[in-house]
Amino acid sequence: MTLTAEIIQRFGPEAEAREFYESLILAFTAKLGARHLGALSPYPKVEVGLGVKGMKSWRAVAHLFFGGFEEDAEIVLRSLVDVVVDMKFISLDPKERAQRFIDYQKIHGLRWLREGKKRLDVTRDEELPGIEAELNRDAADVLKRRPEWKRLLPRPRVSLDTR
Image (cartoon, rainbow, N blue to C red):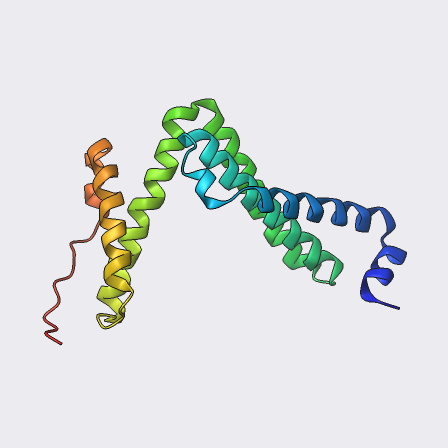
């Protein structure tokens, strides 16, 4: 007996629900490419991103639960509740809060890159300059809207590496 057949036999309706949600995830992600997200205004962009995150978390919950890892499924389920709370909070003032959510991601992406470079001394990775340049451009746009967030960023590290 295959694993899928055993799951269906033991957890009939739950397995059908799992298959249904997984088919929704596959259909949704197949139709939605990254190029479409760039054209969206901030609220739908955040809504779609959190929706996809929620669907992936739901799939992880199902895999963990049906795999016998109930406690781990509960942990991921709590993160799914966080996604729902975030979506509700953002929906109360969609334009401002969605933009703030996106801005926060960009600023902290640059912050973590700079912190990593400082703590791990990763100056020789060839991909870092391109990534950091993109994050710097994004952060510059954010700081035009939110100059008070400049304090969140550590100062850029100056490399003495002359290669």
